[in-house]
Image 1 (tube, rainbow, N blue to C red):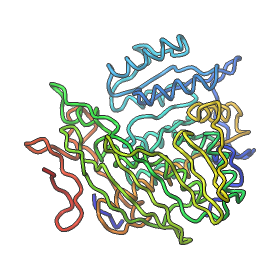
Image 2: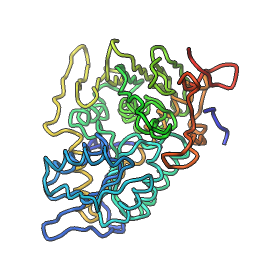
Image 3: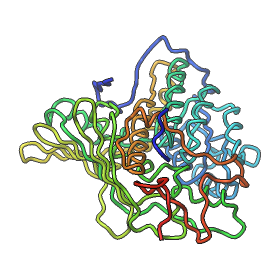
Image 4: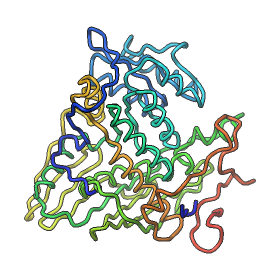
Length: 440
């Protein structure tokens, strides 16, 4: 995956740090709401995070109901949905007629009479689904990250502008934006509590997410889709899947300006298992900005090592630390720590409440997170490209990148990467050569 040659947005309030506006010029799409003001949900991607998002939405508002779902794996989807039904009873109205299976099954959800669609598949598929959901006139919850290459970033940016003109709300799954303590710290930063923001550092140190061994009879495409967090063409490195949260907070403190470029180093120090795919386990990236500031991101996925998931924002008078999912939030000035308590309601629930309330408002309130969704995902992709190439990569070069795709979208398709006779996948190896090779 080589580099291909092809706004200062000032946040004046910390209210959810979303692009929220009240306007009378937006066209207002029809909302399917009965006398009890009920809204209808559809979901694409019924895995743990997807059904978790449904649970969050049902928790956020008593008058929403899941009526249609799509996934590529019927057995997994049915098991996850059965868990939701056990908790929510008839608010999860999914049966054999409303659960669609296959790579094109998402189209059935978009054709359905739903108000909000939850897009929670692996990120490789997100740009196309967001684009088509906007075309279908649906309000959207899109889980992070939202793309694996620059082509996808641009697709979503274009769809976001169309959504704005249509009055379609889009909320992204960068959950820290909706955490009460993170919002309070960011408000203090924007009010000058630590002085001018000078640098930021995102740390995401921990173990691997998960691996799933091969099962008898699987095609290579089935195996890689099942084990998707370990393959670049589907996920675009682990910094895109997890460190994106720390990058997002840091970019928030920089008034959501994208970096101008980055250089990076990374490698595969401990991942040697048969199901570890083709991704790195360590990465360090320096992002540079037009105003001269820098953002540093340090990531590792190796079990049994030092762990941390925080963003540190350094100012001219002090600094602030924001932990992932409100694990910690503090402002340090003059040697004193001011601890910010976490909210009583999870950001996972709040983000859906914000979306649902905006849909119910009929255009009086509008939310569109596309700007920071694409900036943060783009920064993660930029870091991966810089590490793989060991070159300085610009933001424009990232936007010009086009990722690998399978021969087609079916279980018999040929994925972009294949194992050798020993079961190894090529990984990025910077330096002389074609840039890809095997590790013994």
